[in-house]
Length: 105
Image (cartoon, rainbow, N blue to C red; front, side, top):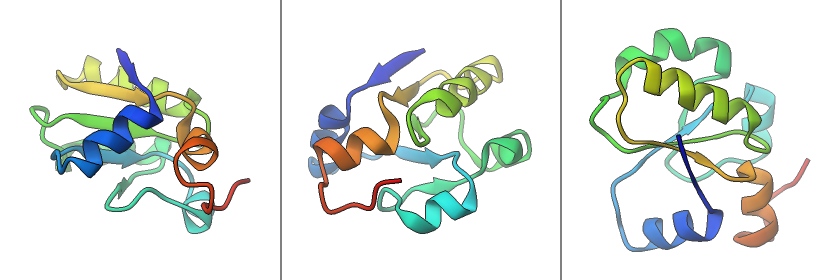
């Protein structure tokens, strides 16, 4: 599975590209901060939430630091998703490098 740097994702979002952002963190984490227009499916719910996703869409998976999202991305690929990327460094890297006003935890 490929990874995408936060700067590259930011540039693609600013350019208006259509991407599915999948947040696999726990609800309490999402309440602190989230990427705009992202879908939410905590890691344990992904096996059922997968039915609401299109395997042809480009899916960018993220979590706090990139570990959980890596495992979810592999799961998506194993289940027929062809265009999946893990956000390198997760939302922590986003808060450090892209949006310094975002809450960090």
